[in-house]
Amino acid sequence: MSYLVNSLGHIQLNVVDVDALVRESRDILGLRVTREEAGSVWLSSNGRMAELVLHEADENSIRSLGFEAVSEAAVAEAASRVADAGCRLAATDPSLDCCVAGMRFVTPQGHTFELHSPVATEIYNVRHATTGMSPLRIDHVNITSPEPVETRAQMERIMGMRLSERMVDDGLSWMRGANRLHHILGIVRGDTGLHHYSWEVAEFSDYCKLGDRLDTIEKNFVWGPGRHRPGDNTFAYYVDSCGAMVECAGGMALINDDDRYEPNVITALKRPDNVRVMNVWGEPAPAPWLAHKFPWAAPAK
Image 1 (cartoon, rainbow, N blue to C red):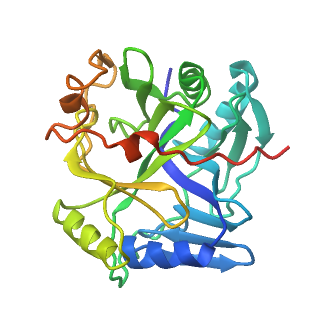
Image 2 (cartoon, rainbow, N blue to C red):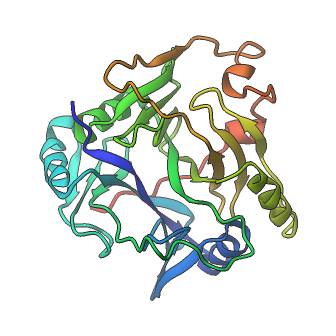
């Protein structure tokens, strides 16, 4: 099956205190505000119009998750597959007006996903003055699902994603798009929600800057810096002001032999055998990282 999705496009969050998260995203991450209007704020780390979209709400939750299609035609093709995959087509237009085409669908597990044409981008306006860490781009997300195998099948059937790696019990799996990075989506067994969203860093020294910036607001890393075995990327995690977990990651593996690649199956699932499976440098995932939960908003009718 051919890819219909290229990469992660954007994340939309419902947020109780939008101002606090905007301030933290500017000062700590180094994002810039690209649009402010009644009830919502758009932020970006580069020349794209939107990567993180915040909506004022009475709860903190993930509203929807957008993936960037390989073409406008791919959006229509994906929409035609939604019903056969057992999901509900919720809209046939993009939720953001910086995209030409888009469609949204809701899964039986309660996730709202969007596939949209590329977000409008100014390639000569990627840098901006900031005191924050300044990531390169939003790059992947890990969601939670009570039925991870079914969610994985939906991503395969509707968007043409491919499996890169999984645990033998399917408790965690990683899927890639046409950009061939090891994963743009991770699926974790759990109640429907978001585990973390991730920004790509340029250099390992960026973690030093991030840690120091977090210290100025009396926060610290939940886990890391370290290096994951799946994806081979470096990582560090913290929890943002609305309670969502944020990862900064760098150097994710590229799957060059895409058509011949066989997904790796991880069989070591318990400590101490699984510690270096998840972190090459040996620091095990701490309890707050393992137990973290962030809810998915109830789908629109």
